[in-house]
Length: 218
Length: 389
Image 1: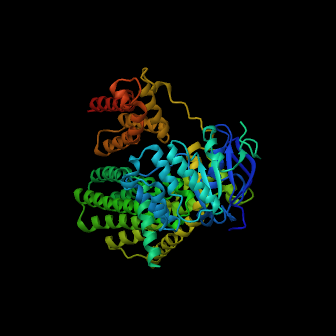
Image 2: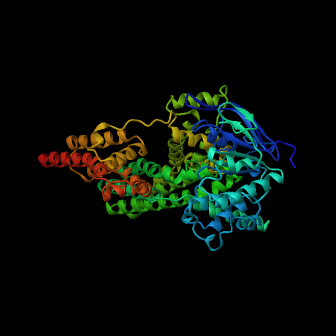
Image 3: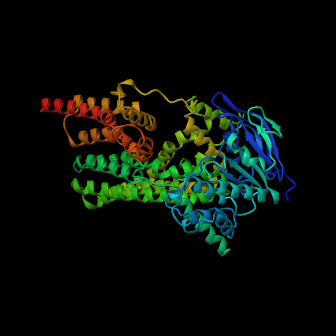
């Protein structure tokens, strides 16, 4: 297990034009910890997740994933990261299995394809064009794509959105397995997802105030 | 080792499928080359004039498809979307290079065909015509070598620099407040690099033209051509490294600039004259046209002003007509992008209480707004030219 925290967000500031979205946020997620990001719409949850995923560069502050500075060691940091964006897009012309293989290769674990395919259990539907999947199936597909390799930080933006109860249970189980092997988990969730994340014994981080607590609050 | 190579190849072949490419890569160079050929064909066999046209028109042809060729390196949505993955910048580079090379090959071929065809068609002898094609191909070769510097410079200088660094001060001043300093390089690099290619091509072109004219060239000219070639090669070899150094630090800024246009995400107002009638789908289409077209007002002004000036000041000729067509294309071509947005629009409109065309996301308002200025210009041109005749 890595002695470094799975995620370190240190005094991060992000502005768009003259609007400050993140104002000096600091957050640490240790191995085996779950942190749920809370805050109303527009409070900066997705911006913070973008900063952690490297798709948004903060104006100030530093982010490290599994001890790797995101700015200085971009590939090593990303190798530790498994990021599920809020609206994962599946490219046209690719079957579900092809997409899983792609992610397994990118994460350096081609054999992890089998694990991801077993998680999905889509049967004959797996080789179909991923663009023909329902919203919930796409979400599960993109979640399954994060399973290969030993990701040390799962960053999930509303992972349960549009997923049926069976799929939600599978996702919860996969997150619990990742926590058990020492990964850190960051989840952006809305009120309706609180029941799903409660079983993960998370701490709650209010993006608006930068405060951590053991209760979801309002 | 073999397994790693196979895996890298598999990753890259899938990466290519994250982006789809439209007509821009080939259509724009073909239109520009065809317009250039029309102009060249109308000059007679005046070799000096033809060489001047190749000298000026060559960089224009290179410039015409530049953005479409290079967009995959940094601008493409998939570069940003895939940023969270531990993919080496080299994988992104190789993926983008395919489209770039295809576009360059297409541009080189249509340029050679247009120049050779126009020169021979205007009655130029075979050897001088071959020389004109040679001039073009030498410029094209320089472009092939130096164009990778555009994404490389974009990545290298598109990062955030500390405020005390010279790069920050220079980029901020060049931006003039129009965009964030990190996006400024993307405004200047294309023009500067095409200019560099033209400058590097000059000694070789001069040497070639003098040789065809039977004039001995000073040794400095040949040496200059070789030095220019070596410089272009050096740039080409550095580009991949420069891109890799800046990739992760520049792509998020570029996409932030694209998304916000360097200001709060509040769109510019659409001119009220273009919001004809009360058709909500029509208004939606016009807004899409206005917001997805770069400098729409300037394009419209160029088309209206240019064609009016030609109608008033120039007499009917192939060259004048070709210029009018090019000006009209400057205004019309972006509206083709609205067609590409049709599926999303149809999904949005299908369940709405609209007539069938509206539910399909179509409206006559768009075409009225797009075509009315063109029709007005053409009418003016026809009337004035027929009066002069």
